[in-house]
Length: 359
Image (tube, rainbow, N blue to C red; front, side):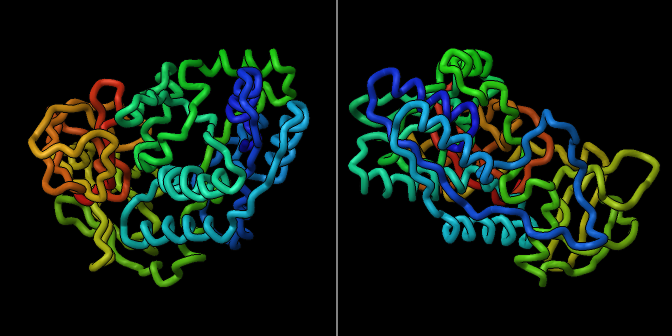
């Protein structure tokens, strides 16, 4: 129970269905570090309609209130040490010129990793979250599907959940839309029925990713050059870790036309930029593949997503090893980014996923 409307409604629905529910809040110790004078932040929306981050003291209180309303046990679990590992991963990936996806790692390492250990400790048969996804607990193996509400579908960030954990998982919101979830929250008389959704990575609520990288990996801030794909030298930068593939704003140079970051090279501390066409590619290799289906050994047609807000695109997937694939898209895709998750679908079923090595 994160203190948001989704996990709160999930708990209420399970309680209503007769489950013996225990609420668990993951205390991450993720309060932002002090802002350094003069550092540049990415743009942040203002206004009370945005809820920055999650896992705050306020969120813990909200979750505890819902648990009290249901009359169920509630525990705040200290995962601060484990969460530090997640922040290290985040900083290491940026320092290596890769763009991390900490939400995927958090699901596999913590929400469906350490939380399983706690479920065992209290002899709980199931774990449940407020994720928007569907799961079919058939006798052979659990099968993970997209949510009914495609606008809220979170199956992309769940491919790394181990199969033993999926066998014990419930997604009460999988067949609901967001508006239906808020309607249930009003029906259950939850004061957080209109609470805004979290908008950012919980340990970077100010969106200043460079601050986190600089704090954890100060040696990654090596100055270098910004070059155009046509070979022109356009200026200098303060560190490759401050950029990501596909970035347009905040590049720090201008050429009289839109330019995007197209390549990052830590060995030479070079940031390469170019026009939109320089970001298009139809091939990608991925490793550390976690299969939720039978491991394939021959090429097959599928739909593939290369980031959270990417619409799955048709592609041929060729297994290279049990945990590596090569993908060729039918049409070129924008900003294939090393470090991001690549997730493979058969229509609305998640077959597996891994991590992009190179375009």
